Image (cartoon, rainbow, N blue to C red; front, top):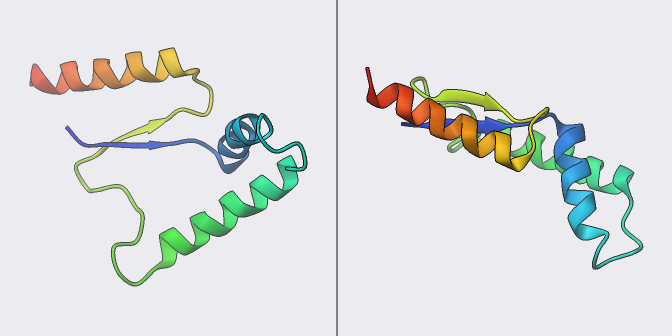
Length: 84
């Protein structure tokens, strides 16, 4: 089973900011968001192996999920595919 796990740039930046701010009090949410958006642009437009879901991947948007919900959803997707 192939999973393509994503979240909105804003959610990913907020999650990363929460991690980084524990070790670097000078980090800003705006800066982290800019970094996430720049990385997304680079990764999705690179000539070799641009970041995109495989044709047979299950798309999983975790924007509204906490980690427990995301893991539960991933397990459910895997189990559903096994039963096909």
